[in-house]
Each structure stands twice: as structure tokens, then as C-alpha cells.
Image (cartoon, rainbow, N blue to C red; front, side):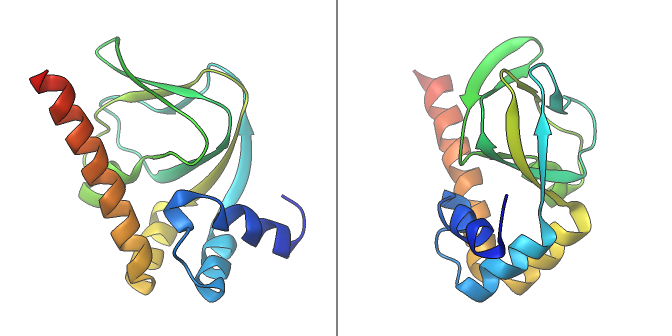
Length: 141
């Protein structure tokens, strides 16, 4: 990701982190690892407990449940938060459709960040609410 300032600038461009102060962005930066995965890599598997939050920096992923395509994800989207929030198995499989660059935050770090940064907690909740509304809309129309 480059220098510390480059990493902070990258984090600030991600919607999940847009309202965080520089101090809080620095906390996220210290707790997030950058990884690269190839197309076909599964970020999460339906029915399996997840232990990381993935934030997409580059690339595309598909979301499926029982082999039915539900959505496409791209830069700025995040996955894995539900398992981290409720300690239940994943509700869908998320698969890289292209090579991807991801930020990964482990379970322990995710919980620590949510407790330390209320703005981050609100953004995660907003993201979950948006997905719930989109799913509800798709099911009722």
C-alpha cells in the first residue's frame, strides 16, 4: 500500500471509513492487512463461520446463496461483518470474480475497533441496514 500517508488516504476514500478522524484512520491502518487474491478465491463460504472483515480495494466479487447469484461487490464494499457481529455461520458465499486487493481485519481487531470508534460502528450498521433494505426490496418486487 505504500507509505503511511498513502494508506491513510486510501482508507479515507473507502465509504466505511470516510467519517473517521486521522487518529481513528491510523488505528484502522494498524489493524488492517492488505492481501491480494486471485479470481476464484472464496472470501467467505455459506454455512461456515467467518473470522475476518474484508474490505474491497480493487476487483470484483460475486455473492451467491444456494448457488443463486444475489449480488456483485466492488471497491468500497465490505463482507464478513455478520459472522463477526453475531458469531453465526455466513449466510452466503463470496467469490472473487477477478484478481482482488483487500483489506482484512481479524475478528479480535474488528471488535476492538468497534468499541474504540463509535463512528465505525455506525458505518457498519448503516451498511448492514442498506443490505437489508435492498434484500427486502428485491423480495417484495
